[in-house]
Amino acid sequence: IGLPAVAGSFWLLVAIGLNHTSPVRPWAVLWAPAWAAVALMLMLAVICYTTAYGPVLRCQRRLELARCDLAHSEEHLKEAAVADPLAPEPPRELAGHLLARWLHRPTSQTFAEFETSIEIALRLAPNSASTWLTAGELYRKAAESGRSEIAHRAAEEAVRTCRKAVDLYPNDALTTASLARALRLAGKEAEFRRAADRALRLHELTPHKDKKLPLVVLDELRPAPSRSSPQEP
Image 1 (cartoon, rainbow, N blue to C red):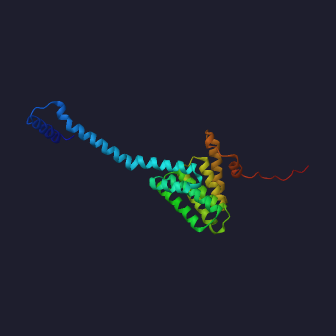
Image 2: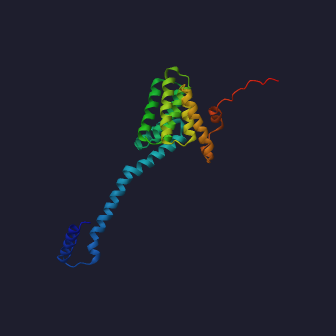
Image 3: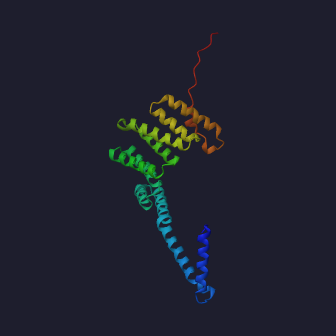
């Protein structure tokens, strides 16, 4: 329509068309387009509800049930994942429940289900720092369980996922502290010290109380006080 030749031809055809139609009332001219617009809007509303809004509502309902009905939380979370296959929250919360079940009664099948849920959540939210951080924290708990068969691999996975979380949210003290704790668990003391120092610096810089590190984490990250030899009298 921005090209003069096209626009001129368009308005010329409109004028010819209007001059060759029988005179009608203005409201009659707009009647058919108005109904067509209403039908189009209704069709778009139905499509929007069935493909976007409805799945979100059903998923949120199942998530609330999972948080209230703890006895059947895993079933509700699986239903939430089916209701909204694009939501990362159901597999992320399901991974936490599966890890808790594995810690209580460790089986290879439960741990495999836990890792599958983590992978699904990360695939659905690849740019979510909180999702990567949750994965790192869960893997760190698995490594701290003392199960020798998975401790080393879980510690490495904790480092990998926490690194990604820090890449996505580099100025958060809590995220950097989680990376430092994972590095120490993996036996990487030099990297732990660098990450711990950065987390402590971010802790001091942030003015937000909810972004401050808890005391127990501060004690874990602070370097041990050096012991000086007693002075000669």
